[in-house]
Image (cartoon, rainbow, N blue to C red; front, side, top):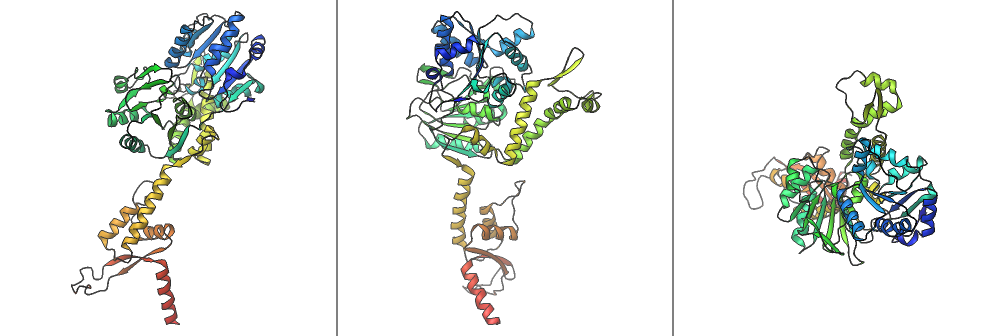
Length: 517
């Protein structure tokens, strides 16, 4: 692999001689470059210049309409006649319909992670993949900043040689803080806090589900645009979709008008946003590659331009739920690949069995190899998440330049612990009967794995004495007949709890021990 320093641009390091060598030998190339590393610029300038001088034709493939329109506009404005821009989906349609496809000397599949990431819902990405791999008379330049799995497949399958990968790592030094949160509902608090404590900061929120994106939009619609895929099937999302909310005002101002943009991963690439007021990017997309794409939608203008990331740290339980959903699709395909006889016994006569990833081609059953690869990669990632955490694996993918990492739950726990300690000091020495005990229990908020509040004395005692080592909790019956003011004690013979200094308790214990001796 050829790895360059952070901040390098491909157009500065990939010379005419390098390009000439690629094209003369129809070499397959990987450009593994971070957002802003000049992948598109390289194609529209260095590569186009070479193609024009040598009468070569370039096919530039895009995965989203927004990217397609952006590149097509640039190609037309600059009169780059040697570049033909096409959507992957248009290529798929031609292949499915048996249409003849022209020969191109150079093929540039941009955002190549598309063929893997979309394989779970677009069952034809494997057709595109196979066609690309079989274009042996063309130089192919596979480009993406977040295609770790599919690039590794290209190398493992010896489609691309290791020495033909060129990498520019991500630089997240413009991110002032990277904050992780656990509960989905925390999104409401984060957005509300930013809207109420900053004057004009803008926010982008990427939602994992369209339904929850709509829910968030309804809460903040006065401040928000809702932007999803124009092909969305959800009728409510289709009605709310503000497809033209992002405007190009100048080279360094591509933005939305309101303070909040709510989107799904439909915006994960193809749309570059430039606006100093975009200071906060919130992400709860589970898929790691799509999530990383989303974080890269804001383009840094200069060294004064920065922002804060908020990333959902999925719990082990949530990861298990995703794993269960994945296995419903994955296990039958795995059995089909590993043991066809066992598959036929399990599913061959089951008329209710249906898999989008196992199909008939004539009389022969086949499986979608790219979707299977995607499921294998996802399964492996989830296993790793279970061993470490979602957060740790995500940080590994983001790289070393993501430094100021904050766990919002830990911060809140520390803040809560401080508040509880002040409260303990305030009630120390008081007799805590039912009403006061309830206040203490509600303040501590111990819950089990099912979020049920725990109220037992033993659990509260263990919590206090473990987390606040200067204190201890005890319980005793109240034997006083009268109170200090001379009134009758209404709580006589009732059990109270009492918090004491642990030192004081030790001194009393030592005195009693000496008396006994």
